[in-house]
Amino acid sequence: MNSIRHDFRSDTVTKPSAGMRAAMTAAEVGDDVFGDDPTVNLLEQKMAGLVGKEAAVFVPSGTQSNLLALMSHCERGDEFIAGQNAHLYKYEGGGAAVLGSIQPQPIAHRPDGTMDPKDIEAAIKAPGDSHFAITRVIALENTFGGRVLPLDYMHEVGAIARKHGLGLHLDGARAFNAVVRLGVGISEFAQPFDTVSICLSKGLGAPVGSVLVGHRHLIDKARRYRKMLGGGMRQAGILAAAGIYAIENNVGRLADDHRRAKLLADGLMQHKVLKVTAPDTNILWVEAEPELGERLGDYLRDNGVGITGRYGQQRWVTHLDVSDEDIERALDLVDRFLA
Ligand SMILES: *Cc1c(COP(=O)(O)O)cnc(C)c1O
Image 1 (cartoon, rainbow, N blue to C red):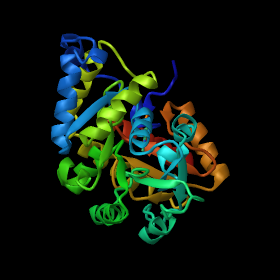
Image 2: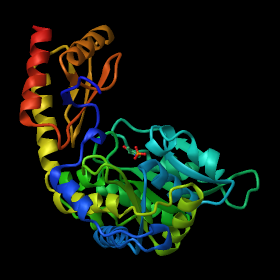
Image 3: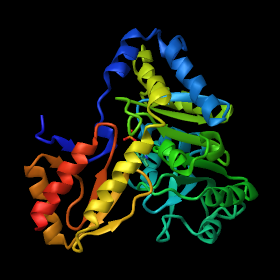
């Protein structure tokens, strides 16, 4: 147990609500490795339909979902292009290299979080030259650290991918946050991509799981690799039921998380010693002078408020278990500490 009562560390800390637990209890199940779990099948159909793709596969985590996508686009010795700070490059243990024998080609980000399309195009290797790994896929991430990257940018990168015959993958762990913010449908948002990975276990509030959606031939390969990697689950309908509940009940309410992140930002901005970046969605970044930032983080933790990051960069995340009162309490503590 921890002593955090107001938990801004991540939207992964959400616990299944009573309604979600009831849906899990009531789920019809079967052996999903045999294709027999009706609730998993329903979640996959629903997600594919919503996102506007042919097929979907339910997987234990976002990390596995991204890995399956890369392995489905690439063969051994191929290459993927991704941002230098992309989750699937930097924060997934090098899985694509270790388990897929796929080489990353990281690209620097511009201050707005995008990669310069010119840099992407320049990094695509000439396929006829045997010096090079074969570039197969470009991966984008949206939201990226909570920031919404524009639709135009995704289409621009999509055009580069098509021009060079490459696949395009979206790490859409928080894609629903982006679409709620943009006010577009998820299928419009996902349109340029061959594969899209979406987390159910973040702001959507499910305890476990991600869904990878995309073209049927890629999802068929991903399903095979899921088994190979140990991600084939049996009566997983109990978990899929939470996912269905999440997409039916917890998407629209993401706007509340965004509103609360803004409330938090507005409060923290009152303090000149805190450099607050206005949040697009549910993730707020705050910079302070390192020693002050560390003391503030300790003070908040001692008073039951959890945030992540130290030495200057703090991350505050809002989610369905953060209320207006949690925001007030946190801001009150910051005011007292800095008074
Ligand atoms: C959380 C996250 C993942 C990985 O999901 P896990 O379920 O934690 O493995 C991938 N990409 C992004 C952008 C994420 O935020």
